[in-house]
Length: 100
Image (cartoon, rainbow, N blue to C red; front, side, top):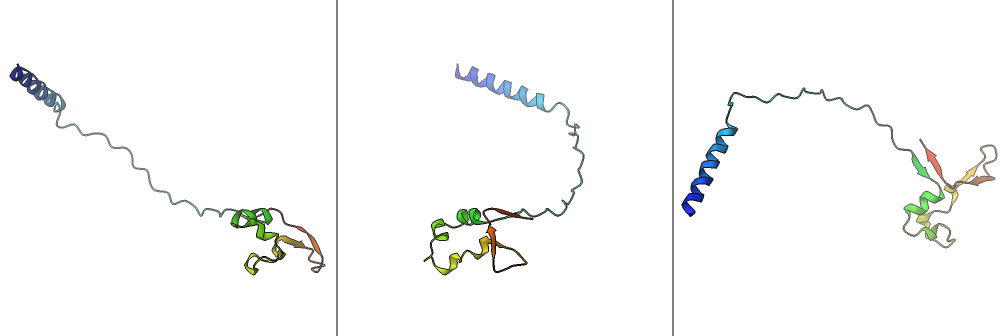
């Protein structure tokens, strides 16, 4: 019984190998080569600034409003917009800014 099953398996495998080797001269068609195009210079992303962006960048956002915060958090001058004619008078507060 085992020898009969072994004979059937071997016979089927030999027949299967013969089916795959029908035409040894066959060469698969090649896909056309597409030339590599160097992308033009990518425009940089806009820079996001303002109080909201600084709050998301800092791990301790509450230090932005703390008057006794360490010096490396800044004093808030970078978030104040001024009039060029009167630089001593603040014009407004920069909440969100996008710079291209």
